[in-house]
Amino acid sequence: MLPFTYTFQMYRHLSGMVETICSEAYAEAKIRGLLRHAEETDLGPIPAKGAQAGKDSESKDPAALFEDMRKLVKEAYGDAYDVLSVSCPGAALRLAFTSAFSPPEGPKPAYRAGYITLWEKCAPLQTAFGSPFPPWYERLILPGRHKDGSCRLDGAPLTALVVPPQGAVYQNHGISYRPVPLMSRTEPEASLELLAVTAEAHVQTLAGFSSMGYDTPGYGYGALDESRVPLLLKGIGELSDEFGVPYLLNCHQGLPFVGPDISAIGATLAVYDLTARFGPAAGALIVGVEPFVRVLGEAPAEAGPGTGRPPNVTEVLPVQHRALSHIARNKAALINKINEAYSIAARELEEAPEKLSQGIQLSRSYANGAVELNYEGTWAQARGFPIFTEEDTLAGMNPIHRGLRQMGIQEIYSLDGSIYISPVKQDMPPGDFLSDEDIRANVRALLVLLEVTGRHSGFLELKS
Image 1 (cartoon, rainbow, N blue to C red):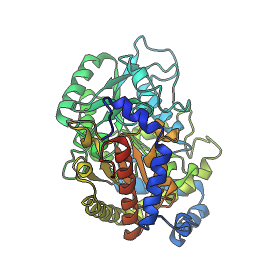
Image 2: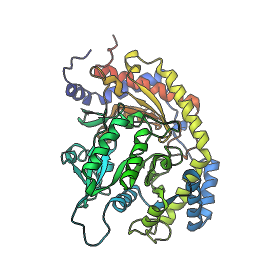
Image 3: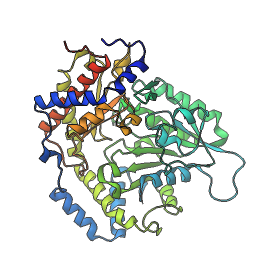
Image 4: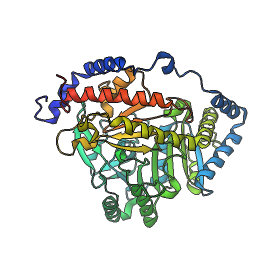
């Protein structure tokens, strides 16, 4: 074992080993025949069914496309829900947060409204629209992540009331050595009690609740009901009803229709970023209860049909129409493929070093169109497998992300203590899947990379 007394020493050591780890993993994967061939990493044009869907969308006028999108949303969530097209994710978040929680234009009230949000993964997306309270969360959450000013709402007359969920653990990790929310042990019932107490304490100025909208332990939403609705999210929806305030669900890069049922959660608004899977031209969607969504359509923002803003929204609509149509048409096939990927990953993990596999929690993430491999459990007793942050990835210092990309694997990505293994081809419409053989090869290559990283971090024994 490598002689590290403290965690920061391990990460300091790894900062100089990223290239070595990637090179060793690449060489070992090549020997085992796990590297994707060039013709396989070149995804090529959209398949025929996708191309036809695109042509169908382009042949319709914007009003007809939007009408179809509304029908798809209502078929999925009920007639009480509607949809709004927005040109980009940053504009969608700004519109949703300011419309749901901020006072309207005009004379400002004497109080400062506050919305309750969780300290969770992707918390910067939730806290960027108000001044975090207690104030130290401004330093803990915001400075290191999502510095893009398109999402930061400077001078907003809002307070983001930050609540750490009960059971979550917050530690410094990564080569960037920043606070990381480790959410797999989140306790829904205790967390909801704390949220209720916070709401009561701020009831005179409470504007609403906000959270991410995922469905796995790594995000703190591993406890699900029989319909796979996260108990914590469902409880927040009940709290929003109790206090008579809106609940804004940030589904981020989750898939509409496939992830948690926003109507069962009780969300007032849900924001979806479609750019991750469909490219920057896909923009974003706001789905929610009709009265709120119709009001949003009248707001001075980059909204969709009927507003005249912006001129490129007519270019976004065909892509969005195509995306929703693909997801709706391939929902059952996508769920089945995620289940298959889960089975493949579970079988391959049986061959991993016991010390690593014992600390891994494997789960299905229908929202992400992936299987989540969460390894926070390796830190249960002593120093565990290294956790790399989003800052590490952006700086090219995350050996898991960097090593996978060098191997030609685009369908696996890491975020803090979780790794997401997707059976959906990157940058392709949901419905175009990797073969079982490719999924298996991807998982095996990932395990090679994890073993090499584990040895260099001191978590696993060095090879003699």
